Image (tube, rainbow, N blue to C red):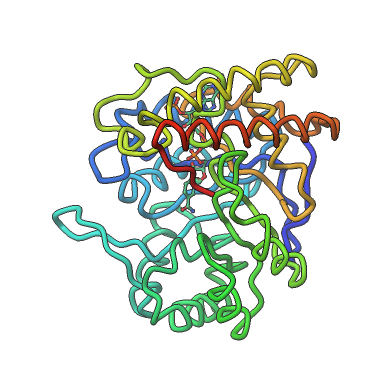
Length: 327
Ligand SMILES: NC(=O)c1ccc[n+]([C@@H]2O[C@H](COP(=O)([O-])OP(=O)(O)OC[C@H]3O[C@@H](n4cnc5c(N)ncnc54)[C@H](OP(=O)(O)O)[C@@H]3O)[C@@H](O)[C@H]2O)c1
């Protein structure tokens, strides 16, 4: 497994990071349906055996449950793994979710994450969303204080646009940005990548397989009733049929390299120099076994062009069918 330096930090992240959203399970607005904790723990341990050295989680994933599962999985081997978690999405006793970057809230979220993760320090602490816009500076400065106190090693952000990045960067250097990035969501390739290149911010994209759509194994009957993807436009008609046809075309390219569609999708994200590591989600060991195989996979330029053509055709088909294409 190759490693890349994370932005301005001294951390070297494996090219693949383990994404622990789905292992948070069900029972809240962003749930992935039922998930067996033992299978989640086995998946995380297998990831570490494969050379993956970092895990991305968040307080909000399973309303704390994902962090608890991560803690169980790395018990006794904490020093072998880097932990990234996130703040800013909070919940109340009714499990209703809201956004806060109030300094006290960020601090108490951090304390709660340290406890759930059963650790003294968080390697990378990220603002999950910039939704509490007016208090971005307040929350970001508080993370700076948590670094000075030794509770956090490095600070990152997620889902930030350039204007948010500029505001945070004025206060303290940003170590990483976690944006959505996949063949089907390329909105960050312009100004955002440019800003990260110029400011030495490591990019750690999420959902490189478009939350399972770009694995070559997705089918209409795969989702449990309480899986958030049931409400996502890409998983609904008219987009879904067009997307699955696109995946069939990707399979032809993947076959050429003796890779799977999932591996091709992740390798496509890793082709960019701005990217330090791709965060892939997995619910069981076999899934991470497959996706870990994307590290080091080299795709020829001609096939990147072919993927661009296929994306263009997909956009036209979605448009004709009355759907919308996100960027
Ligand atoms: N910062 C943010 O706002 C944000 C947002 C989204 C995600 N993230 C982070 O990024 C991580 C990854 O994103 P993601 O989970 O949305 O998307 P992803 O990595 O594109 O897709 C992961 C999902 O694909 C399916 N899958 C994975 N490997 C597979 C394989 N080999 N064969 C078949 N299916 C496979 C699994 O779901 P099924 O088995 O259920 O199909 C898995 O949960 C998250 O866990 C989280 O850490 C962050």
